[in-house]
Amino acid sequence: MRRHVRIAITGAAGSIANSLLFKIAAGEMMGKDQPVILQLIDLPDAMEALRGIAMELEDCAYPLLHTITLHDNVENGFKNTHYALLIGARPRGPGMERRDLLEVNAEIFSRQGKALNDFANRDVKVLVVGNPANTNALIASRNAPDLSPSQFTALTRLDHNRTRGILANHTGASPKDIQRVVIWGNHSTTQYPDLHHAHILGEPAMRQIDTGWYRDQFIPTIQTRGGEIIKARGASSAASAAQAITDHMRDWVLGTEPGDIVSMSIVSDGSYGITKGIIYSFPVRCDYGRYQIVQGLTINDFSQQRMTDTEQELLDEKAMVEHLLPEETAASHEGLSICLRSGVTLYADGTGPDSGSKYLTTNRVM
Ligand code: NAX
Image (tube, rainbow, N blue to C red; front, side):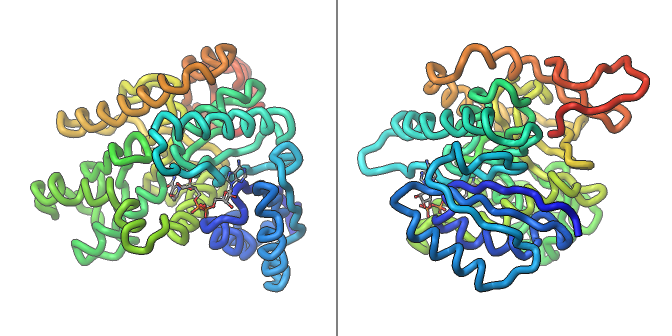
């Protein structure tokens, strides 16, 4: 049996976590041979509900579930954690403007970034789910000066999975036969689901679908799917979000399927001309616990326009919270260059190993 890993989860008494925790404990995220310690965090008012969830987890008698700890603050909850899933966030209330939502969440995520910086394992891998996820991730990352920006990601895997599922339904293929779809940009209605590099049963997807349908129906369907689900069930996506979180972390830790591409929101290193230092969804491949942006995809004018529109939205969000982003971490975020050489990750910000060294070693794992 392997040594256990620690997974801290905020919003652990909420709807997404209610599906997610049972998948993690069953080994779907970290592997069927990986024992886990769950460090569950929620607000003080939710502790009794959290105690109920912990009892249910115990009652499942999962062989891989080593320990459960409950916390009403992130400083205790993040101690020594190897993974942090930041799900809890403040939802938009009546009369609240987008700017207000960004501000209240900025306070939550700056505290969480500081707590990760001070208490988590040095190689912690962070996934932000709570909305606005990309900008919340940026705020957390900018408040963690001793961690590498590449340790912070945000969830666009649900959009990626939706793209595969809905395309499969339309074409009659199985989702497993659909590969290399890409979500670019923000987890919002400006995101760009790109099928120009996708394959269905090994053949280019764009040759198998109508371009008019793709542009006028498919793209808006993916962009507004979250809202459609809220309208239909009166609550936002929960089980599908839990599946997407499981997929995102499993691929990051255990690697992507050979030949496939997944979408992860990560700090931009300037690839594809996207402004450095914002958290933008890119096509990536993962191996050995690291991710790498897939380079060299051809971008046509249609795609370029959409990639720029969603980038602009992220720049606007960043401008609204700029006063909460510490200046000391600007350089590390804007000077980040992510590349893999000889299977080793190097950073232009100096946090990686010496590229001239004969025997390369990593001091940061993404
Ligand atoms: P719920 O309202 O069911 O649960 C949220 C939980 O977070 C509650 O138990 C609450 O007490 C807790 N919480 C709030 N602030 C906290 C804090 N500062 N520290 C710790 N816990 C805190 O929401 P749920 O449906 O689970 O959704 C959670 C978040 O995920 C929302 O922000 C939602 O918008 C976002 N989503 C993001 C998705 C993505 O793809 N990035 C998709 C699904 C979802 O919409």
